[in-house]
Length: 436
Ligand code: HMG
View (spheres, rainbow, N blue to C red):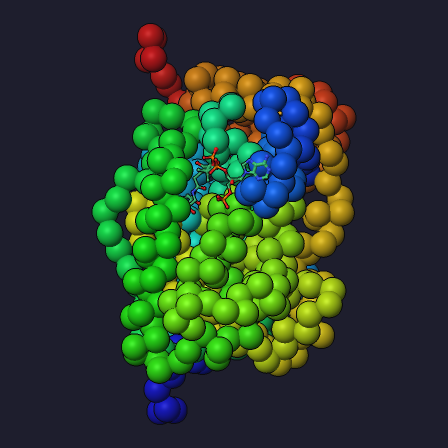
């Protein structure tokens, strides 16, 4: 028997990002809301927010991130033994997104699938469970697929609206952590029941006690940091980069300021430190907005794909915060062979392929999603290509993927989606009682 593995042998082997194919300029949103664009762009640090088209949802984002991961890193889907989806944008109160991903990404039957939910902490919770599963060694050679996928939606005109966004990040977790190796320090976590941000199941949009949520975030950060530094003996200076959960980029600035003050007993020299160790991690967040559970990993992809940063071998600190709240600080090292995976996250490619939309289109897209939330028999126009959300039929969500009939996959963009008995010939209609 070989030596026992530690958490230092486990981590992220591959990472890929998918984002919606449209975005709204946050300055346009400010003008439409009659707000000084300076507030959204400088006060909050927002620039663009990803907007879901009617044929996109958290499932589509997750499937696309997963398939990009397999293709870009040449990974055999049969190697996956567990799928964990971290999300707070669940499309069903019972059926997990992980099951849709399992079918559409072509994963093997002997594979465990489930979703985890804890606001923006869900992706990190999934990552931690996956590393524990790999270390447990019950399925030698098998990998865990962890996907963080979310859509941030607030009421129109609310303070949270400029911080909206969406993205999915897929990560392969295993014992060859070429991208990110987790360091073996004791867990630095902080939980406290707070009402800072929430979304009751009857609502499509989240509610937030905004300023209170910022205080909760900062308190949790201090809690995690004091636990981490006491256990590890490491100070802030031990980190080359610090990645903070970014609901809006200015939050990472506030977080680093707080930690810097605590760690340096006052905070002289903060500005250059922020520019060197935090700013390079934020450019991708300004492109997509808040992606809840995926935000921290969008920052990670941004750091890996930064044109002026060579992150190879660097130590990074990741702060994950989920409202409600649970938070964690993790120390990790970027893999030594950066050249092998740079460009492979797909981040730059998916961002470059996007189209800007007007404020009117943003409102139309929102309305389509809101109608869907009300009506159990909704059909979207067909997406140009690939995996797409087609609507619901008999209260079932219907997706088009590569395995469906040519008649469907060759339909022209904008055509109404065919009824789901064409889309899913194998599926039997569910009898729904009158009045339902
Ligand atoms: P607000 O209250 O309308 O904004 O919304 P404000 O009045 O605080 O202004 C924001 C900043 O803009 C301020 O700067 C102003 O001074 C500045 P600060 O004092 O913070 O440095 N400002 C201007 N700057 C330049 N030109 C101007 C101008 N006007 C004002 N003309 C709030 C802000 C964050 C409350 C809102 O966006 C919100 O409610 N967001 C949602 C909640 C949120 O993101 N909370 C963050 C912590 S909780 C978290 O991260 C978890 C979360 O991701 C969910 C999850 O876990 O699932 C949200």
